[in-house]
Length: 288
Figure 1 (cartoon, helix red, strand yellow):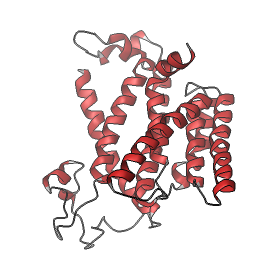
Figure 2 (spheres, rainbow, N blue to C red):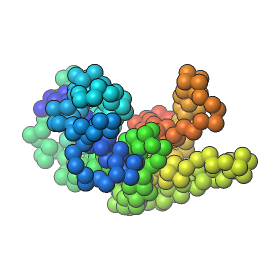
Figure 3 (tube, helix red, strand yellow):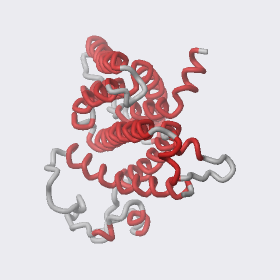
Figure 4 (cartoon, rainbow, N blue to C red):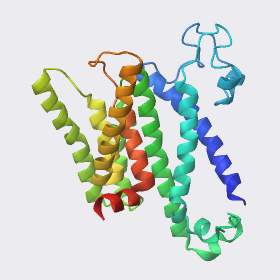
């Protein structure tokens, strides 16, 4: 089977899953019940039919507008779908070496995968661990995407996408499904939560204002439980730098006041994603 077919299938799945995460994040962020009627336009409340709900494609064909009332559809919808597709493709390539049959049969010239010989080359448990790891990070990145979506729309990160999943990180680490120890997972979650808690406390003592939401702390705890203390450190570093740059540009371009609140969760998710994909490069650069 050509690896290009696998990549296309994963990308298309990511688009569909991103569309689902859009709905989940939107409803939880606004406090709407999840099991409700079909999706509606938030302006005219016209029911969105299936042919107007095809991930990415429908938004492009409708030129970003509701078919009924012609009001603009939030750019968040196609953006989250596209980001989901791209992220899951990147996760697949990152975890490819853990699927030893895939890794063994990849040709650098033709990038072909011989799916007929998996069981005859590598023990089944190795391939099974790869599947488990893929499942673990599928949950992790689904949570990051949903948290990003809800934070951008409503400045809130539901605990379903953060704190409630921290124990899963511990379990995955304990059973050696992810590449950190249970000790690193526990320490990472602790540092992730209380590092931002301490920053928020200092900020409030100095300015008498709340500077950071609990949702950010819980999201960084989730990141720590899956990526460990180094993952927390790099997520904070990359998230802070990217947040400072993009936030400053946003304030200048849209002429917002310096006291305007901006979501920090998406930048933490961005930092965690970069660390997951390029962890060895970051560690080599900073600690060589």
